[in-house]
Length: 113
Length: 111
Image 1 (cartoon, each protein chain N blue to C red):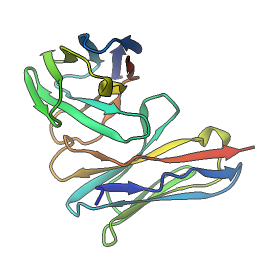
Image 2 (image 1 turned 90 degrees about the horizontal axis):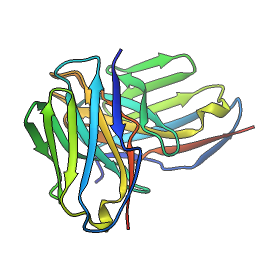
Image 3 (image 1 turned 90 degrees about the vertical axis):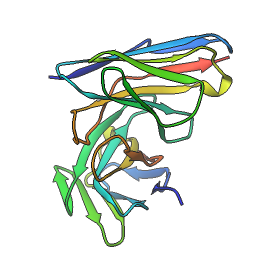
């Protein structure tokens, strides 16, 4: 069966510090991968998605970036965090191609102080 | 107009009650729909997929009305464990990159 991992589970970072969140998927090949952010009291916002290694599409202009160095690894980064980057970051995967059901990882709760 | 709209609630119902949530979507090209449940401070988990007029899974029934562009979720015989936020999701034709999530409806089932 497929599993998706995210770490760390929680993170507290000062404004201006860098960020690196990691997501890995097991039990599937060539998945589509996604990064979402869920701010307090708001819906899920798609940040990035990837259909393959090195292929990243950005949905929202911001100070975040994403990379996919391996088939089942997706990384979310920032060089300098802003207060507004606080939120619940969720990685998700779906079967490659036109499959539309997405499955979420456990998430990383980021607080920027 | 928001792409997927849900009544945020909260809905407070007694155990054993039947409760229904509605969700409207603005993109008529949306092809498939989902209901996810999200527990407090946890990730969303898929509850049901809706591809045609509806779907039923035990106590849960989802119905789709394409003409009126709304999806409903009916929960019968509510359990305490049903307490969660229910997210309505629309997927446009052609792929999953653009899933659109509603902000969710919060349900609390009381003993």
